[in-house]
Length: 334
Image (cartoon, rainbow, N blue to C red; front, side, top):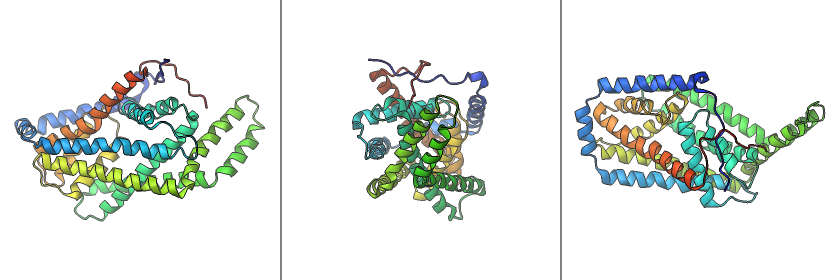
């Protein structure tokens, strides 16, 4: 079997986001080292209710087939990829996104799905991202009405809503104006003096064609329902883990933490999001009066469940599928 290699990223010495992420992670770890009561943290970890941790882990794992089914649905009306293989590809891409810069995992997924062109698969992933962004925006809007939340968060929340509005307008515009855009690009390609004009138009055409699946009310409706269920489960995972480490859980705390950690994706961090993830968890839970020891024990367990476990699963699946994550050549035509 031919291995599918990962594209070469820019040298690390040129990647300022990588080094900024390392710096922020080191600063976050240093802050935690000097401000945390480590004996109390160890006690909180030892005394945690691991029955609830196991339940949270099972809930989190249940989102994997849900997300895969949601993604698979957006391939309609084209031939649907095999569910098992698509799930594996999704997890491999997720692992790469956590450890590599520039969301290379999305491009890897597009290369591994053989039923459609790379540009078509990239379009289906744009739809998945738009659905998740919609859920985060909806939660953020609800949380903004909670007067007990801090001012430092509200500025980021409002920026997210602005970004979400622009993104949704762009996606909807591409879906609605697909044919005029294609006619315009075809007209331009006839005048381009270089030989790849038609290939560029075909790439864009396949991308836009994938967005068209949301014109189907069934696909759109089921995708939205699946998204609500997925994000509800994410909130339930936080709720259970708060209870597991001895914190009086609340839905407000669980979903506030969920949104804060989603906003943190925009913050540069080290591979695996070590440090920044834990710092923001402690900062978010401090709003609800949770002490550093309990908050950090929560963050450590959640990080293992939501970050480390998918990396391990993705690495195992990449090995089983003979996907070479260290190679530099990668075919992405189409």
